[in-house]
Image (tube, rainbow, N blue to C red; front, side):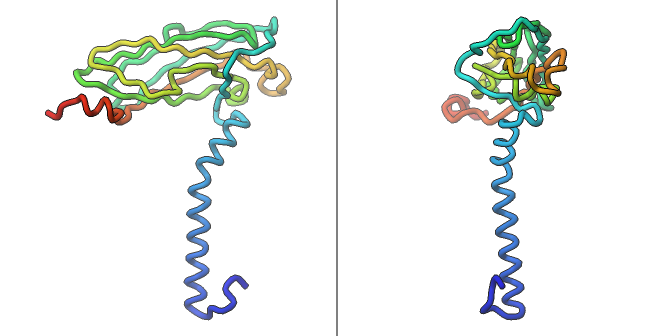
Length: 189
């Protein structure tokens, strides 16, 4: 028995509160656990991050396709500068995306990303990416944003991912609140 000294309605109330606390704790912990799970397994197209390129470059090539989109209501324009490139597995690739703020106000954005097919997600490794930081574009500003990456040579040993003829890297920009230092510069109308 969990609550041996409680009887009747008090015991039922204590058990109900215990279940509520347990469920709340599991709900709170589910986000970091899910994030960890996705990073380890590549589930859902989650990529890996590295400080440097691969030590091994294979003779086998793979095509990388680039995609860019905007969340509904995001006022920017956003697109890849190059739609597709072919690189050797393990070779460091460098791609660029262009973002433009056509409005008369500063707009902050954050990019979410994924990789398809999902099996290849854990083998797609980003070295540096604009998606690691918030982006603030001033009125009328256009920026070119780089992403450097490689495909881990271990992909050729994965029974499912090794057959992927191409990997698609997709970004979606979302509008976020301006950072405090930027928001302080914007005068209220």
